[in-house]
Image: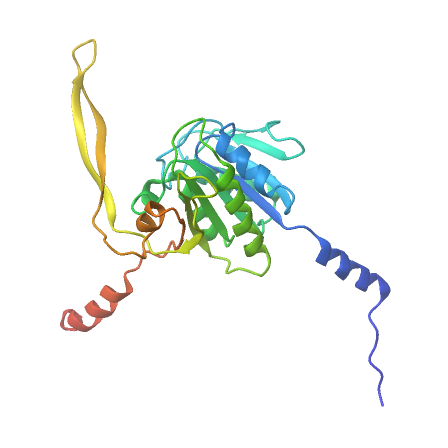
Length: 276
């Protein structure tokens, strides 16, 4: 009768040490490395893992999934967060994620957090958002990610409720292994902690801006245009992010970078057979 060979003590020690390793959490944003939102996000989760910050050196709102290809990128360390390794990048939010993985971490982090954004990223905003594009880029790189946004554009916005729920969500995600392509779009209403009713898992509402370009002239008489618009919700469902936020819920929308419309794909496969 053969005996099961016991693992060497060194192997046991290495396994135990590996289990005790804190997760590596990459934090970025689109409002810039010195913005109040990212500072509050770092504060909310700084003891949950090894935090690395790589963020733009200036505001990059509305950049979407833009990357820098025609000019050099610069990356420099900053001391904006006590005890936290942090860098500012001259590029876009997506550039920050790419550089963080390739040149700072030299490995994929366990989680990427983007935000906390000043202003909403619900409904159609997810398409234009630099905050969410950073999270999407992380997921493309097989890093589970979350984008956080607060529905308050003020520089003096109250981030306490956002901090509280960001921590709750991150703690929950770290309790088990997540799908490597997971992306969550989290929006926090402009409300007090007492007014917030909880977290609601939602779908993205069909809502968008009815846009208008105001035509003006500069001091030299040259014409220019200034984009304005009014946000209009065409979706009356009570399971959407817009509804949740209007009713003081934290909205959580799982999103994906695969933009295939599978319903139409199935339809065209049947109705376009004669074109083959």
